[in-house]
Length: 402
Image 1 (tube, helix red, strand yellow):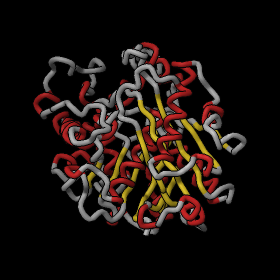
Image 2 (tube, rainbow, N blue to C red; image 1 turned 90 degrees about the horizontal axis):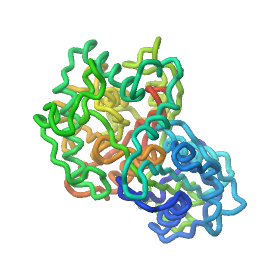
Image 3 (cartoon, rainbow, N blue to C red; image 1 turned 120 degrees about the vertical axis):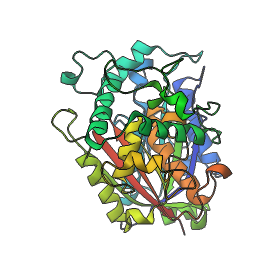
C-alpha cells in the first residue's frame, strides 16, 4: 500500500440485546463511544462508512449515513452506507481504508450495527427470517422453510461426506467457542456452559434445524443486537489524534472478492472468492499463513469454522474440523481462532460482525484481550468475513503498529 493504515480505536457494545435503544440512538452511541475510547473528538473524522443489513426490513430506517452525520462535527463530510450481507462490517472497514488511501481524509470511521430484537429483547422469528432470506438467490428459496440455515445445512452435509467429518467433530467447534465466550465480557452467550455431550444430544433447545440434514441448534450463530465502531488513520491521522504507532495496529493487508449468489454449481467447500480475497490480503501484507497465530473467522455455522480455518491457511482442505478437534484453534493452540467466542457464542449482529472480528484481533495484538483468552506472543492476525452462502468475502491481515 502507498500509505500505511492503522487501527487507532475499536469499541463495541456487549452483544445480545439493546432493548429500547432506537436506531438513531445506537448510531450516535457507536460514533461517540468509539472516539471517546481514545479521548478524541468525532469531528476529527474526515470520512466514514456505516453498515447494517436489517434496518430497513425490521425498522423501516434507511440512509444510515445521514444518522452518522447527525453527530456534531460530522455533518457535510463524505459518509456512505454500505451493504454486503454478513460481510457488511468488513466492507465498511475497506471502504474507509480505501478513502484514506485515496487521500480523501487522514482519519476515518467505520461503524456497523444490527437491532434484531424488539424493545423487550424478543425476536420476531418469521420477520427476521424474511429479512435474512433476501440475501439468498430466489431460485434457492423454493421449498425451504428457513432458507439460510437450510443452505448451510447442505454445506455441512457436503463437507461431512466429502472429508469423512462427523457431527461430533463439528460440535467440538461450538464447544470451544462457548468456552471462549465465558471469559469475554462482550459475548452474548457468556453464561452458557456447553459440553460436547450437550452439543450432540437432541434435547432441550438443541434440535435438528432442517429435517434430514445434520445441522443442530448449537451449530448455529445467534440472533443478536449490537454495534461496533473503528477509527482508522494514516500516519498523519495518528498525529492529529495524538497517538503513537505502538498503541495501534496496522491494517497491513486486505482483500475482497464476490462469488455468484447462487450456491448451486459452485464448489462452496473450496470457495474461490474467499481464497482469492485471503490471498490478496496476505500478498498486500507481505506475509503468509505461517506468520499468523491469531484469527477470527466467520462461523455463522460450525462448518464455516472448519472451512474458515482452511481459507486462512491454517489447515489443509478438508482438515479444518480436525484443526479444532486437536485443540490447535484454542487460545493456547497453534493459532487462536475465534478466541472471542465467534459468531456462535460471541454473537452475530450482522452489520457489526466484520468490524468486531477485526477489532478483537486488534485487541489481541495490543495485549488487551481478557487474560484467559489472550494469545501469547501474537505476531500477526487474519480475519475472514463472509456474506450470503459463501458469496461475499472480506479478508484482512493485521500486524503490530510499530
